[in-house]
Image (cartoon, rainbow, N blue to C red):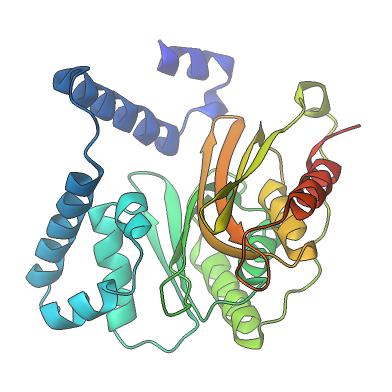
Length: 292
């Protein structure tokens, strides 16, 4: 029924990415129903399952186990929850291949109709904004992102994107994007983030964004649910950059026309935001995201 509803709205709305999302929803919902209400989600078991599957794939391609263990010792637990085994194996192979940092690797996933972009670089305030700015400049659709920071201060970020025609990037665009990202990340300079106006056809459907800011241990958790529109991620990244905030971890997901993002952030000194800073951040985000 969901497939029929999407396809009936407009043939252009249905694509391989949405097909994949619905299949994964069906698969995981079936697993949850089989477990029953008494069985809760085992976080540690999920981590171990991902690690084991990724290790099997890496061993099959001849990657040294000690090198993998050393590299993974610097990854936070969230990496093994956010990345699936295949993504973890691919990104690990790319880092261990010895490519110089900043490393920007890309691959096409034809079955999903997307391009995956892996960014591994020395972290700095503005790294996320710089990447978001280049993706927005090329008018790419950002379907999902997983942003992780290693314990030794390096990004381990994965972005899933489509071009303006809902297709994977062509070779020319991929080459230009890779060069632009490597240049910005090498210089550690973020070019101005342009504010893109919301298209008039979308304005009637724009509601007030849902923004929650709270403290989790020594970090601040920012949750944003909003209507998707061109330049949304750049707008959020611009707000974080304006407030001089450090992004440690993020889960970015697009479901149709709705975006649900979660960020773990600190101030420039690595501390959770004060109540005043939280209020300033929310005000900055509303100025950029909401239509008055």
